[in-house]
Image 1 (tube, rainbow, N blue to C red):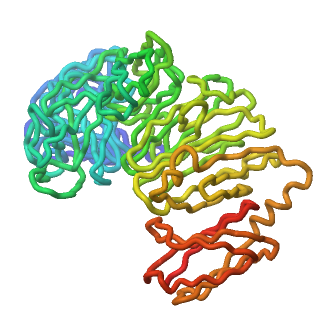
Image 2: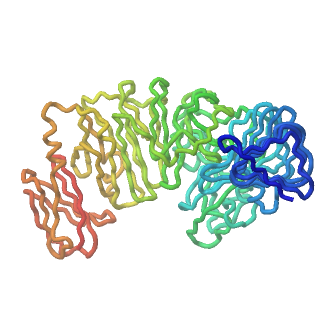
Length: 640
């Protein structure tokens, strides 16, 4: 027998109220998507309670008995509350992952609930949430799973009650290349064997871990999973000595971060040479973290390049906010976070001014202060005896902002270096009267080197900064840039947010390799070439010049901005003509590069026109760069 409760009340709220709810064998109570079933006393279920999509059932008092089931959906909600509610709840297992599915599960009052079989909390763009309120107890029985998919991950929200028993927390990993992922276990007792799906080769599940010990076979058998050793003073942060390997059956420490090379799921054969990469979902199973959680951090006072860096992990199966107003206890820990971003092969940074009255947060590469479930991230200890702990108050239900860019304040220069769509880096220089020109650990954020492209500003003796808070004394300030690419070819510098600077400030980019100075009077995209010459990259190619503009100094800036380059014919066969629209420019240098960055021709341009013999060039696409001592630099493309 199927009973539908549909009662129309004021404001079209569909509410069914029952003091005692009894569902007998063979009977089904169906709560539709616009209804809220409310039971104030005992709940006896030998049949089936179906909570349809969008529906909510509130079991708010008395004991629960019976082996009947509750059937849900990805948008069904269950609230268990009251002052004497207790019992075991069973869920419909007809279609695993569909009929035993809920969106939100909430315990309130002094309710005590035990799960008698598997229950899943939905992932997605609006993921489900479990909340275990103060004074309540949830006994999972090992049956609770927090699902994750491409759109989002289910979580356990702020829960000051008691959660006992094991739970499973998933983490979806997209297919955007065979790259390292920085992972963490949001439960206590998780293991790398679980990341490997307990060794089972199921499509779309688990990863492979290679190396020595209990591992998956591969052609190279190189280690693929590590944790970071801040106490090892050998080399810089990326040196192998600072990374300790784990095998495929290692206990994972809650609150510690791990770097794991992910190829995809476990269906990929690593014993043959291939570059296959596909989506997968990893999981861990264990108990809920204690409250508060103590996170292991160290500070080693030595000259090693990784001084103070700690790779930690989000300890909770929920997003957390690194700069939450409450919940954190930090001693000698900086305000910045660095999260590796596989989609661009670079670290995303977020730094908040140590002076709370400033309320300044700056990010690069899409960084943010919200850390997702199962995510590891770098923080930096600033002095001896650091401590770090957190409680439930640091949790947030918002989606991590790793893919978003922050709204920027004025007097902030953002510089992006692009090799291609998959290899991008960014740095920010932010000027303010409260900041200092020298590097300060609580004011600037050091750079962690990326594998393929790197850009940073340099302070002092080889101190590379991803975020540079600096004084706004523009009388005459020079800031060197470090620019590095892993292969020869054409790169691009994007200098943006120029309009946010005071009108009295002039900004120039000096290219010491080409001996040119370019006026940055508006947002600009500047292509350049890295080749075999060591001076074409590194710490000595580019520097920024900041000056206060004297009266009448805007004239040259306007001339540079309005000068155009023309190359013809295009395509060309034997002869290429070049002309500048400004007839006053003299003694320019013309350089022709292949698209791979190889210089193939260089010539001088005495006046504003020139004719080049390109008969010996192979057919293809070329870049022509024209520079001169006035600070002019432009690049155009032609085809032979």
